[in-house]
Length: 473
Ligand SMILES: *Cc1c(COP(=O)(O)O)cnc(C)c1O
Image (cartoon, rainbow, N blue to C red; front, side):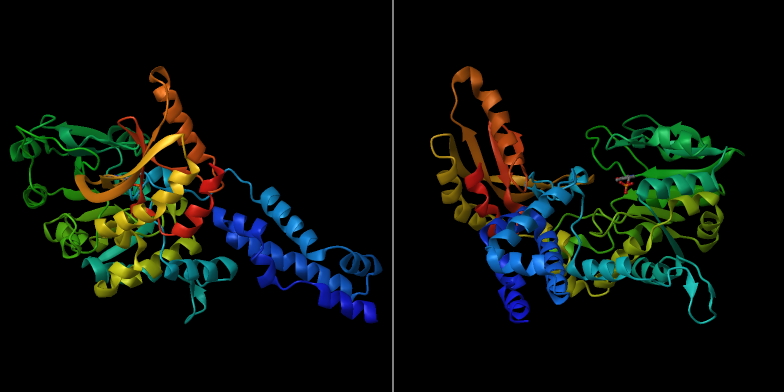
């Protein structure tokens, strides 16, 4: 009996375990949640075995250095079970919305909502009043309409899916008129001509690469025409001798000729970005006001939410989208929905938005503040790279990214690292250096520019953890 209670007493407190160096290191590598979960599990297992008076366990707990044993077990379990190829990284590329690094980081409000949704049952398609089947879109439609002024809305897996659903529902085997200058490719897999083809639409290009006139659109309309489409030329801009037709005029032509006008905004913001000192981008509400019948945009670009594609506009058209069988294949799940609702809820209070939405916080982070972070980290980096590289602090430009406002750059600061190397080996040593940063416990992704590795610290928030791992370079 005495032995049993001694064994209970010998078990270290979870909090104490979490403060031990090996586990702190894992936590700093972005695995704190896994470490906590595993520590709780291991201690709880021992507790129940002691409670059952398991002699072997009790003996082991009393005779070994139980704290050390537990730390080893926890660390091994975390490494074994969570050494997935999918891992947290530091995005110090200077591109704030980085598609390859997962785009928007979600606010804590969304994370809490996701946890609740993920771990329990939700009335996602269930009407609590009638006890009958409900509509998945009901939960989101009201708030989206409130924020955009639209009549109706629906949500799918991403914006590519939104465009596909619109085309397939409204223009199957019919013509879609689009300016040649907007036949863009966005991030490899999304190319407008190919999207048209897979949605079973006939692409009708009008105008030329640099100039498209109102009469080009007007003359292209025939009895086969279903839609006029505008695609935000997200990732490039044509300069010089150019001409395009405004949304307003395009809307007018579409309505005079009896076709539907759809605008794929790509990023699509819900708020006036200039109020936060950011460059002007038309809002979804403005685009609808200009005469777009439907607007599609991403959930994880300028909106700062989870991956989703949002479609807003005329109720009769949205109804047709919802009836398409494809909608079923493209729908979002309860966890995404919970996150999106939480993010949209923040938009109801634009005053608070800037401090609560990580994306907006990063985009509006003052350059002086970023410079101070660079100066604080500089001596630590110099220490870990002594004799191997010249390290300094430079001003640089961050990009918003993901095709938002392609030419607008934000003033920022970076750590610039130039490896010490012989003349013929400069490129190779630069690549090796970049790789060394990517091989840290929590990989660091920077960008190479002009013979240097640049780490733009705009998106760095956990400065302390970042410094902790530098000595492993
Ligand atoms: C980004 C983008 C898309 C694709 O959106 P996803 O949410 O990544 O699927 C489509 N059209 C435009 C104009 C875009 O900028």
